[in-house]
Length: 331
Picture 1 (cartoon, rainbow, N blue to C red):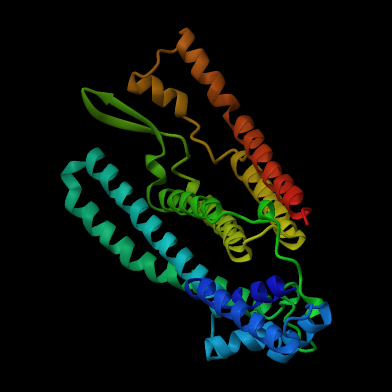
Picture 2 (spheres, rainbow, N blue to C red):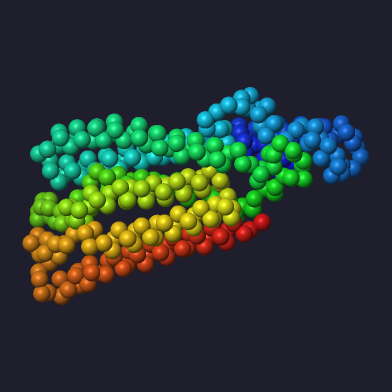
């Protein structure tokens, strides 16, 4: 019960303070118990009375924190800063990669590429900060006040404390962080250099890019692509915030994964998504020669690429949901 109480209090505090406050709070509880029972046997009622005297975990956390009003509370603030740094660094890295590729492909216009890089940074950073703040503010408002899992209700009793989660149920921070970095970089690529997604042709030096996507119609799909990756980033943020698999988190994960499967299947199976002249572009670039075995192999792969992507996506997202369900069931 003491472990549960300390866990509930520290989850409402900044990450950097949790370990020290946990040690301090445990010592305080032990001193109060010793004062109450002396050298006698400590019973559950004694522990409950001490915890009731200290107050609910929410009240105790507020005493350590010294403030009550905030847009993003202390329990989310560290995670908010982590996600914000990840998004900004990943966005800068993605734009930097785009700038380098553009400069290599078209070195004559390197000054224009650099200006475009600066403009993209200036316009993208405020948007990224705003969207990340909005997501965490909404999470704080709708999720932060609903803290039954930590036993922070107004009418509080130590028996309402939940158990400290099984280590196998916890989510390693590295997992959602890596996913967020990947999604942000891919978003940047789709937003600023979709025409550079293709086969790079070299003939001693760079010659051209044969694009995978239909350059004439991809702008119609762009909002859906960016929105889809944004939803996936929200899913990873929820994992980072929660820190452990729960049935509620698993439900959100399943819902977002289903949306992802439907949206991606709709996008990539459309007639105007892929480059209709991809094979002829490879022939004109001299990559393959029509009628050869190599041409037939590439054509087969190209014609089945949509099916392969859909299958891999479904398998990956289903596994993500199943893994969440298995880990959420652990006590």
